[in-house]
Image (cartoon, rainbow, N blue to C red):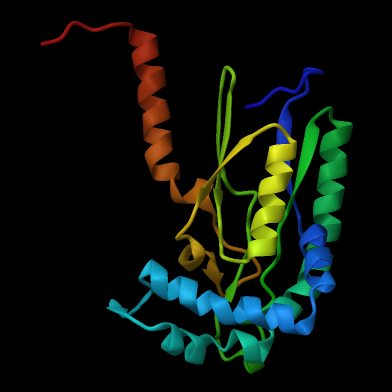
Length: 212
């Protein structure tokens, strides 16, 4: 991991209050515009239903994010989760870590309430990312979900912390969830990265081997 100039290990902690602050500054029309554009992004990713590609109009009709006001629903759970995240950040700072807060937004369109009719919402998770730190190289591989204002706020937080941001599009499908939060880019690639790390440690332990 990254070590700051003071010798503190850098950790990233989500900040759903920052995401809620951003949404609250938007007008209702701006929020609905974001929700209206999401189906376009999903269709562009090749989103499928039962293995069959569907159109943006079909996605819009099924999820009805504008009708449910997806971003408005995210405010309450983001504030509630924000308290927990703030406490976690404070605790980690007291332990000597350099904490960097990353804006995010909790999904409010969960399947817990019958009125939601099992619609899927979106978890805007920017803290579950791939981090590459090797010598002078400090890269963050960051998902971009198509919520421009929040995408840019998360990227800025990493850049301000001294990282080069490598944006990865096409992950909105992975952000769909019936719960408050879902997995992210780090979780998606764990089955690739962990075997590589194990293999690296194994060969480091046994040393160079002759080719057969």
